[in-house]
Length: 278
Image (cartoon, rainbow, N blue to C red; front, side, top):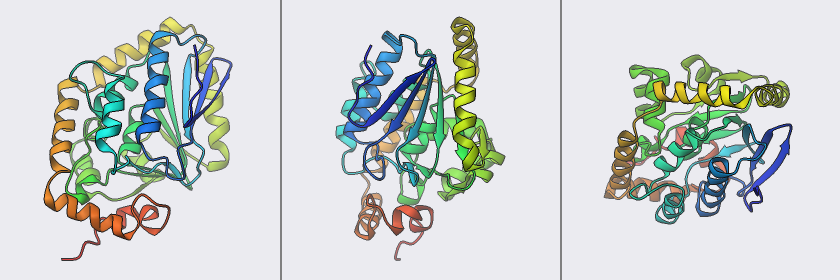
């Protein structure tokens, strides 16, 4: 059992693995981070050792994970495929595998979780967020694409039809309070209370008999997770849409303004995707 990664800091304590994303200032979901997450997920399936709960957070207070690395979609997809089986070469199926790991997973979110970064959080069993600092968004429709890694499946089940349409087609930012009210996240907490709350809950769950926890998670997953075919369909649609000329034009416009670098566009991406010259 090894939890030694280049883009994820880890600490194991009382059955809880604290996994802190540390892949640059934006924590873009790219080759290195997907490779390390794939290794972590495979270890949780094959040799979890004493791990009963995993808490995923970020080394950055500004970004849990901004989104996928839009310059390396084929490359990170190839890394994601290594965690799946034949025909499962997509970030969506990779995160679907995360949703089913035989331990409890908690996303602790400060800062922005957008696009694939939000889909990473949604693949976890629970999301707890800083009331003052967390922002959630599936912005892809604003560029001409759609959430291709589970966002549609999770949010439609959690929010219901009309709110999912608002969140996905509106492509805007949601603060933690509104995300909590909609059911996007489990709970919003004052920033000063977030760490202590999540640690206490994680260690509480880790102290329970593991077979009962695993059985409960499997039963809930059977009732609530999307079918694999729907995840694959969204991934195929995403791959097709990002290749369209209008989508490429919008992404190029955002890139020219500073997409994928710390600054105003990434800070206010919900606003930026609607500012396309006509």
